[in-house]
Image 1 (cartoon, rainbow, N blue to C red):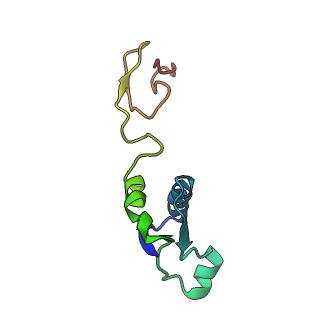
Image 2 (cartoon, rainbow, N blue to C red):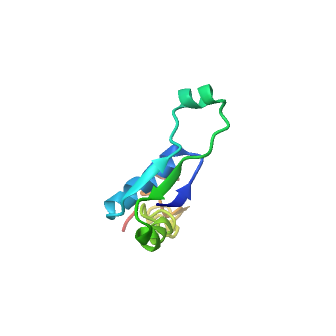
Length: 103
């Protein structure tokens, strides 16, 4: 087994774990304590970690972890065809006039 990812937010670790599983890479989350367990332990616990079950999957896993599966980071800003205002690429409608983006 090999650790490939860790974050303070369990949801982020779970997202990447689910994504890797969808790609056929078996993994396991460690240090996934509930809030109750954390308070009983004193609260100073390590962050959740994502571990691969097979070391041979490390290269592929790191490639997927560096990717943008939601497609948010690489979308360029766009100008509204109705009012001309610029909106960030991840938005489907104009922030100013609320017209839908023409793709």
